[in-house]
Amino acid sequence: MSSPQSTQELLDTIAYVAWHGISVREQREGWVQVVLPARDDLVNYVGTGHAGALYTLAETAGGVAADSLAQTLNAFILLRQASVKYTRRAVGELLATGEVDEHSSVTAKAQFADEGRADLVVRVVIHDTESKPVFEGSFDYALRPRKV
Image 1 (tube, rainbow, N blue to C red):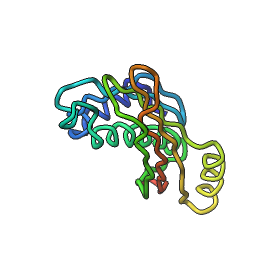
Image 2: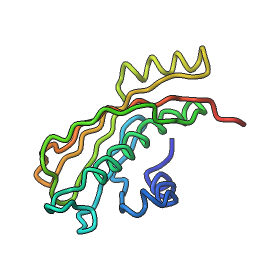
Image 3: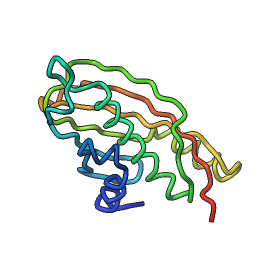
């Protein structure tokens, strides 16, 4: 698994993610916290967090959490589908927590060992500066073998 520093270095090479200023706060296998800074160019016309910026933060958290597990299998990830819910207006710096679903993790590891491919579910919640949830999502990733 990558360290938070090497994960940050990777995220910084993805121009779209880097433009948003997303940073890794903490990371372990199957779990991550990433932060979106409070910036005027990341808000909508009413001054709250832009839905696209929140989605980018959430998918980044989901991808990092999924990839940390995929690395242990010598696999890569592809987003298959997402289900998202915006629960309240987002204001200020935002913290996304992405966590691989435990049952999905066990199933995916076994399926990948048997078939060389699997699916993995990551749950993501974004909290505002008051620690209130502003976004909930489920991101489904396909795991595929890395070519050596």
